[in-house]
Amino acid sequence: MPNTLEYSKIFQPVLDKQVVQEATSGWMEANAGQVKYNGGNEVKLPSLTMDGLGDYDRQTGYVDGDVTLEWDTHKLTQDRGRRFQLDSQDVDETNFVATAGNVMGEFQRTQVVPEIDAYRYSKIATLAKGAGNSREIELTASNALDELLQDLAVLEDKIGTQNNVIVTLSPVMVQLLASNEHFKNLTSESVLKQGDLDLRLTSINDNALRKVASKLLKSQFTFQDGKTSGQEAGGVVNAAGAQDINWLIKTKDAPIAISKTDVIRVFDPLTNQDANAWRMDYRKYHDLWIPKNKLEKVYANLVPVTGG
Image 1 (tube, rainbow, N blue to C red):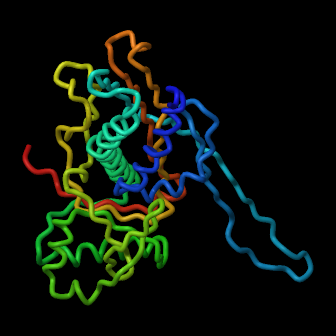
Image 2 (tube, helix red, strand yellow):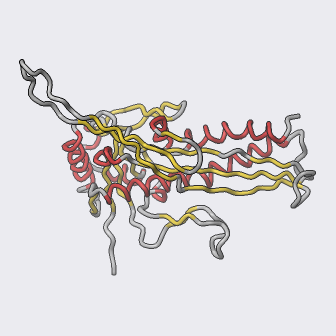
Image 3 (cartoon, rainbow, N blue to C red):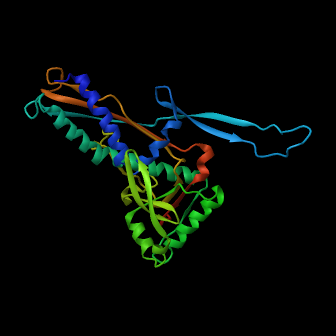
């Protein structure tokens, strides 16, 4: 049978792959190749700027131009973890991998993946608002389609016609859009690459619609520490004053997301000092950034805050 170090090697790549494929924001990790990571909790993201065209002179030739490549430093802010134990009477070495794999896979599917999605969408909304690329409006069946087309036009006017725009919105919002008789005439099918998967999505004017549960589309969340009174359950809950997101519009290359499973530590019952049980220490770190030269490629539409 494998030793405990080999168990870690079995679990880690499978868990990382699961996040990319099951997170509705998993496609954003395709941009992680732009990240320079040298260990620790910091990464560097590239930002490229350059001069425009100048007149060519037949005597002096070309006008010199400047190209600036800056590496902006960002911190990995999401460092999350949990410890699990499986009693030795419930699982022995012969079936530990299968049982532990089921436990960790279900934990990621029901707890980790939704939290990562929630964090990414709330951060995109926050960055878009901070850059002045957002607005707030109450949507109805009569105005939703026109308002979405208007936001797409605003983005297109800034960055030009793109064929790599993704609109993140809830199934309820898609149904609201579809209630307009013109919706069907504007839609087609597109394919979004996410890990090893090819997702077939509905597109509107060639802009892919990525459906996400409404509960994940909030401007703010509270990520519970699992230790403070009232937060023992851990996970993610709605933050006070959070706004609902109608939709997020962004190009594929704008958000850069990373999620990594740290080495899964496994202790057998004889090594575990706390109980006669198998112990698994799970640690996940993740974050999302949008380089400053790509902030113009994101747009957020939110529900207005009501009441006082």
